[in-house]
Image (cartoon, rainbow, N blue to C red; front, top):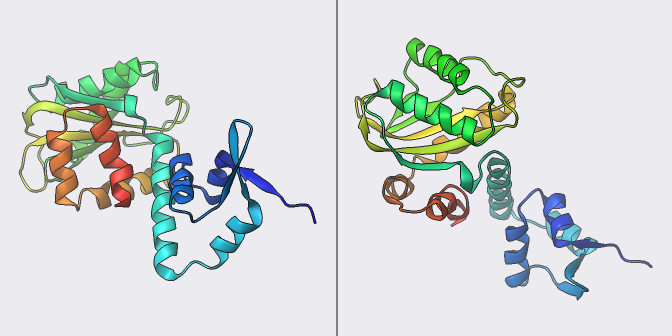
Length: 221
């Protein structure tokens, strides 16, 4: 009987997780990998058997890993914008909008600024604990080149009419294509922000890598 094999990337796609998750699973000997040329192969039947025999806790852990993988589709290390200068909410939105243009997520930062401010004037997107989830009132897939989430941190506290009356320093700008992406991202970020340790790291981190790990890899710990 001919056996089917998967590369690390194929295994990651099959389980809907990242390559790094599969490498960690190999390292911890959950899967046996055989080197072939410049890559590794895993027997597909072994992966299917592992998946079929997961207990409830392992299913929850896999779901979390899949969430991280999905979030990573929208968030990249280069989307981190640390310690920008702004004196008020409008300057903060302008800075984040310019960043979106610099990253080639949108063509017109002035348009983005206008639609985000229009949403902000309806009700503040500051959700408390010094965090705001900036986004347009309506989704604009034709204006946003690719579904993206930008993380920004201002150099100083900014009054943002937050529900807990605390100033904001941490910003997520959600530029997505549909309601499913939007609701998933809000849910994922909201769960992260329930962890005070994660919040503290986001406030104090000195590097893009530290922010990226906090929003993705450290979630799995």
